Length: 600
Image (cartoon, rainbow, N blue to C red; front, side):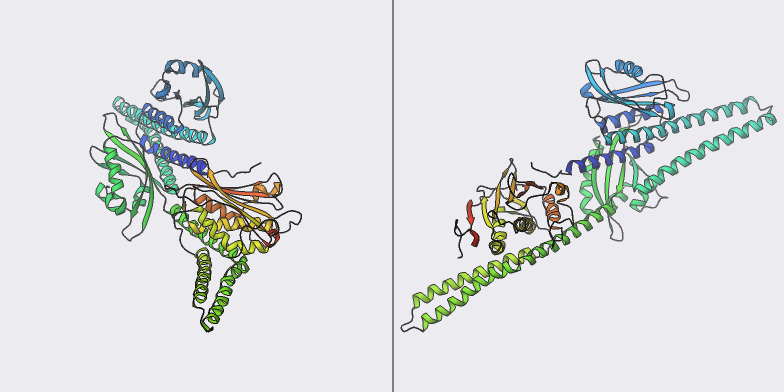
């Protein structure tokens, strides 16, 4: 059975989308400030329908000041023929019931001929403000991230509705106060105590509102997310306190477009101009990264999420949030640097174990050079001199010198410590260079190496040295796994082939001791090793390298003895043809059975 590693790319994309949605939700209270409950509900429905990809979403408000209970439902445009708003309201009222103690409801139910997953979220304790119901025909709805977003959206909506109710209550109190003063002027002494109480209540309400605003500002400061709005008809820009801090503008001065453009990194000004032009044409939902260059030369990395809305008069306004991602970006760069250092240490450690093999590879041509040079001198000293023989001997000397030079060149490439370099390369050619360095050690360990390198193999795009390090690690691990095998040939197969339509697979198969099923989950962990003299970093670093090349590395036990390690990486943009090689490289233990490759 083949054991495969789970690729985290989809989880990372889902997490990034969830973070973006959470940032958008954090910006909603600032946008709702001063809005009516109906406006808050409409914005909430649009946001949830867009974020959670719902079939419909429903909000019922039951406890508002100076307003009757209301129901609002929004159906996805693609589902308008399946779900009628009036029928949905009737069904959901019956589904929710009258018991406010049932705070959360979640079940799979039928609406007409459609089976739908329903989940409700209360607005306030015992649904004192109302309730939100989201529906989707997906059987796995809601996922964990969707439940999180729905819960935060409900909390944000509750805050916005409570603020709207508070503002309405303030207006009602103020109106009653004015009427009381006009009606009871003659009874000023008696009404004075009532007036003081009402003023105190109003102050408490204002203090509560200020605390809410302070909490929002503190939340933005902790998350390093600032909010903004831009009225396109007047170019009026409003920054939150945190956004002033991010841009390092004077909080007492209004923000101008010219200031923002002047603070943006010159290389990113075209991107900002493009996004502003799109906003002016009423294209919403912008999500992009941009840099700032501060007056002292520092660079900040920002992530922007925004969209356009229209107010009651139809005027276009762009609102959104900006996150300071500088520390995250610097952390990623530091992590990449540490990973490169670790890969280099592991590569040098592996090559240290190949010292004897490399010495043999260099000594062979050097011995040939000395022998050929002596032979050449004897031929020239003969009477008469053997010029033709000396010339041929000189050619062999040059050949052996080039062989020694090639070994040194390959060794310097694998030992080099340099930044990652991406290039188009022939994977078969890179494998042959690693085999040339490892061959003597494999022969000394009585390993029978068989290569099956497919022809018509497309080129791959990546770092040649790092991919060769992975091949070297897999070859050495396979050889070590067979070091104690004495009852069968120590056969090692390295194979390349097409994997699906746009990927290339490399496989290293040995006939060693195999894999411990209980250790399969830890096989690629850092510092985990089954060797007495091992760092436990080879496979961990190899997996990191392959994942940086957008591929995957996995291991599986063979049907018989031994194990198979494989990796798969995408092809490059172009194609290259590699020579097909099918054969057995002979070692001393296999000379009597089959010899395909001898010493040159």
